[in-house]
Length: 253
Image (tube, rainbow, N blue to C red; front, side):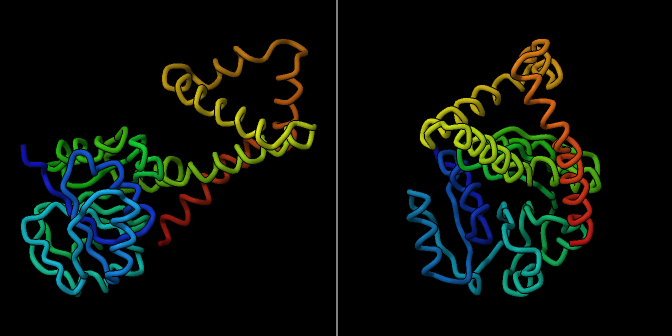
């Protein structure tokens, strides 16, 4: 059975993460400026792709995922030709109206995250309702999806699930550093942290965070002591401010 095809414009980290999630289901074309970088992309992906120089790009009738930097949108729009069947954009803070620089039958803004490379992205979507089912199916190949009703909501989602891996990476590193400071070997601290995140990732799918916390925190116990330190240090406020600041930045891009 012939695989459906999808074309990615851009060959950066997010494009590679998306391609890793899609490669088992779709035939992939990658469009980019530098042939050498396209070769590196193919090697990193571990499967054969169609490599197309940006100057030769033809989008007529194709499903396009736009993965360039927002500042490069104008340049790309001047080099690609043809009317795409559907244009999906992962460009943060770039409006649906701006995407009309490229011709397409329909437009959808998306915000996957880096976990796409292991098929566990949390992708938010919004745009032309006629593409809703197709968009959910396409990005469902790389993880979970949520269709949102407005671009405002997508910008907030960008701050949460799009940027979230960086926030969680900071917390993961800090918790490991704390264990090392108390005397645990680095390798053991990292193993424990990874196991913690893996188990928590499953639990949080079905249990409210407050209930998880209450289930661990016994009166006067070790968790209560540590939790108090987190509150005293303003971790809750810091997380909320991270979302606010990232949202504000997304609106200004």
